[in-house]
Length: 514
Image (cartoon, rainbow, N blue to C red; front, top):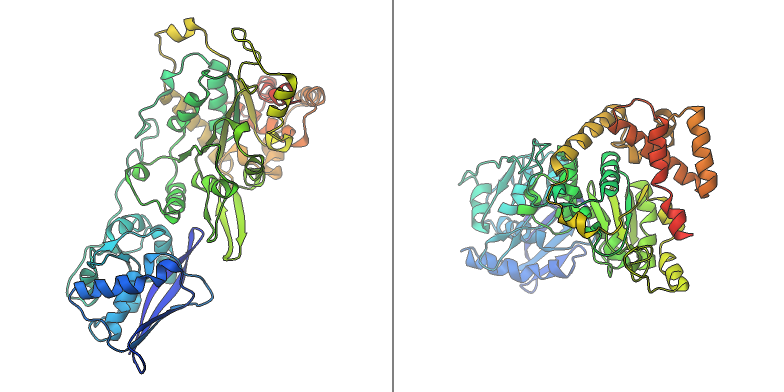
């Protein structure tokens, strides 16, 4: 007897339909045969499913049984097919009478006792079920909570194989899961879930201003300064001043983390943008994404959030160079023998570095021990093309003891977040008819339309370009940053002071690196 159960397979962060076909009663040696290009974890499902069926009080087939995962041209990975296979076996042997079995999309790992366990990619499965017009989605509890975030898609959670059988056969009614409000949602001026605040930063007013401009326009930022000047401390507080994501952005964030295997834990339940800070020993694949079965890397996990690279020159040159295209395009395409996927990676890059290997070049209180060749080799680890893609370069000088002893708190994250939120509203209104969401992502057409400057300001910018030997890309970056500074000032046009401030954020790439 043949039974068919609908499920799904992950390709990157998207799910594609998979039909689990189970046929029992075949002649031949009594055994279970699994076909359809299964991976190692899928092949092991036979033993898990047999134990789960037995321990749940059902009987396993005593005849030859063939299980096909269609289409057979796509490699299947992970334990998501355990529950569909078990239900297919019970339906094909007549133990499960469920006329509407094909109306549901089903996924879940099974323990030997028959209890269900969460699987990755629940959000993607929910989107697939909605696209396919399924009556519902049946998943383990934690995965079901993720999937319930997709609007107008019924989701049901099952604790065990037996509960799934009772529900699908109509013997037990399960309530449809309702999505709940996330911590911090709808509170744009109250950063939720953070125990850090910008009021803890001593001094560094120029860096604080650069951070405000960078976050307001979605620009990339490089901080250069000696050890202990507060670069990492400032970077870790950037998420507290980011405006909250929209529902669509947050679902994109969760779908990427879900596809990478991160379940909906307490951290992901907070209505926040991601902050990723990989160690400098990370590989190219770890940063960009990929692997034998291509999956998200750190740049995709930072989508709609911040990617912080501390000690930038210590990263492998090859790892840094792979950032160039994603910084421009906002997505990355990975090709492997197992397939080709495109992953979103629209993130804000924040980097920090020392001015030299010892860190004290230019420090008035500490003597630099580095030779000129050492300094040159250290700076050469960051290429000019990568540096061109970083909009703001700002120095973070060492603090004096007097500044450190000051008890008066600096401006907190709340007012900064409020000003940035107002600037983002201006940009949303400006780009409401395009896919662009901030100044840092403007294309040439939008740049020409929204970043017009007077002839006097144009002469000023031309003079700066010639003196600093900046590239054409740097020219566009200066105009984008100027537009953000004007938005923060509430100005509809880019004035000379806005342009001058933007130009000063580009001077360090030539003074320090050439």
